[in-house]
Amino acid sequence: MASADSAALAAISGDLPLRRQSISTSNFDIVQTYRDLLASDPDLTKPVAAIESLIVLLNTVPSTTVYETLDTVKAHCDRLKASVANPVPLTAGTDLFLQYLVSSLKQQEGSFDAVRQHLLRNGRLFAQRAIAARNGVAEAGWRFLGEGKCVLTHGASRSVTGLLGRAAKSLQGKFRVVYVRDEARVEENDRVVKELRGMGIPVAEIPEAAVAHVMGLLRQVNMVIVGAEAITQNGGIISRVGTYQIAQLASNAKPKLPFYVAAETHKFVRKFPLDQSDLGFKQKMLDFSIDAASKQPEDAVDYTPPQLISNLITENGVHLPGHVFEQLLSIYGSLNG
Image (tube, one colour):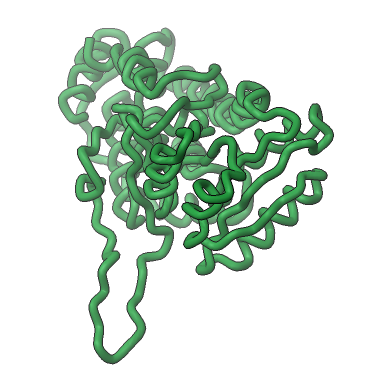
């Protein structure tokens, strides 16, 4: 990323004022801003909350040059990612906003203040479109369901809930949902199930230990639809822990069950994990103890490789996992040119 930023800076240096200055000290707290945004709006995803935080930063912290603006944003991006156990979803948002920032600085003409105001106006529009993408996911994916079909899901993905809600409007609830409960998140389970049933969708709740039984012996499931915190460059996903084993069970079912991922494209991230040990951050899943209850990390995630994923359902349509690499190449190609 550093080399790409340097190339981008060199590319725009001839058009805009670019002189090295020290960043002004500021009391702006990017971490608290991010947390406040997430707390105030439950519909915000982590990447969008990161983007919104950076927009607030640009509107709060003064800067007078291209270098100063980019250096300030990059420093706060690093600070924000360092504040969380799993920085991958935030990285998707911060990288995307930085690319947008460099592209805007490169294309705009006029005074730097005019350019900065343009960034603020269009940055907010950028974030609004990212939030609205969830409706596009629902429109792209609801037709996978049909009368009499049964879909299994788990977690609290707003994209999945929106997709199921959109299907309920057209099918009058004539499909069913098997919801896999996470016993560590009782309130979340109850909220999601209540919301689905409020849409007129019949919901059966099962514990995680019953997934294989329901998929295999009873053959009650036609497909699996889950969300994701991030979609990696190779088309895999980082999502709620347990997603990987559900994907494996779907792949080994007789007949094989399609495994769909509903997620917005702003969750695409330039990361290429090889396996569970290559997430890029540590989470202590094994807590060996002889005198106390073992502790599990909060918001634990796992990695599901692309070969277990049938399709990605995004606001831009339904794609094979390989689409992610092509999309990221298109988005970030300008940074490497």
